[in-house]
Image: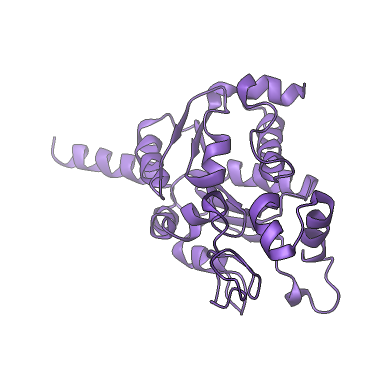
Length: 278
């Protein structure tokens, strides 16, 4: 058994309960590696999960305290916990693309605005894969899905000169990065930076869905071919201009520890009110 999995995760979640070839286990492993390399223990981290594939596969996996919030509500729970918990306790969230960029987008923007001290890992399988494979907020333009049999023709959050990370930066996020699940050391290092930032951090991590997205959009369920497609569409591996890449990876914005964190602001305001009206 993987020693890190044995150290941090519940046995019933080892190996991953996701579909064969799914990239969720790769993301999970990178988060655990980052936690371990930062010297954090089970008691130091509260792990929250959202809905869909990302929530179902990671819920209850962490041996320590964990919780779930459906349909974008994980951020509201995190806000209450952040104010209530000791300042050195870390909150890590694994959410899907819908939880982050769809139904949960407004909640994410308010967390960024407040600079809430949480680390959000967006596990993005490029659509609604847990409900059959419909297109979503980050489905590449032109690719067939169950709800776009002639190709997805809506503007998305990651192409056409748009990048949802830019919206989050303007909202007030203090650390933003993107890596696919196939990346190694670079992804781990940036997750570590995200956890260390005392403020709102988000790492967008697209990953391969072998069962639905690959089967419909790519015409294959062979993991090696799907992984090759991901590599060919990741920045640094794309012929021609870097802008041609679907997945532009690396640190997007780093202003770590540059703004007052939300729970600290709340405590300071409470202390000032108490001082003023004693």
